[in-house]
Image 1 (cartoon, helix red, strand yellow):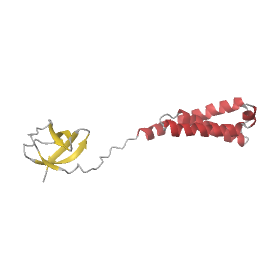
Image 2 (cartoon, one colour; image 1 turned 90 degrees about the vertical axis):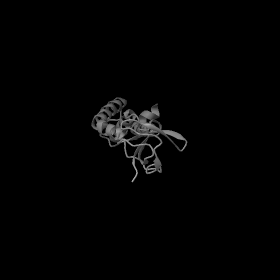
Image 3 (cartoon, helix red, strand yellow; image 1 turned 135 degrees about the vertical axis):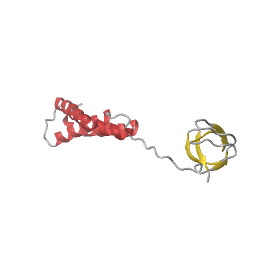
Image 4 (cartoon, helix red, strand yellow; image 1 turned 90 degrees about the horizontal axis):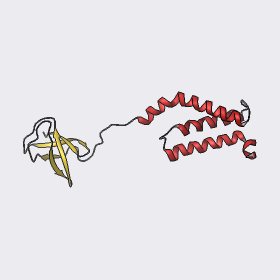
Length: 151
């Protein structure tokens, strides 16, 4: 403990880096609490190394708490938005554009079943289509194929 107190600024930077590594490698940025504490601890250690704040345990704890709170208040909303950003781009694959004959009538708002590639898919369309109509797949969701009349 004596060694830690005699090298408090360096110890704070090391603790901050360890917390940062845990947040990134173990938590995967799922929680930002460790990130904010790590940033506060690193900044506090840096300020102590520069001689801007005294090298005492009370100042270290207080400065870390205050700086972590400020960092959290300033960056919480932008980081939460960054974390919740979901890409909704349709992934192209070989199924899109595949053409087949409808095995049954497909009414608007209803689905039929079509067996393709070992899977029974539900098929829907934006218009009513008769049995035997050649259609092509335009969209693929989980267990659902959206088709339109082939040209």
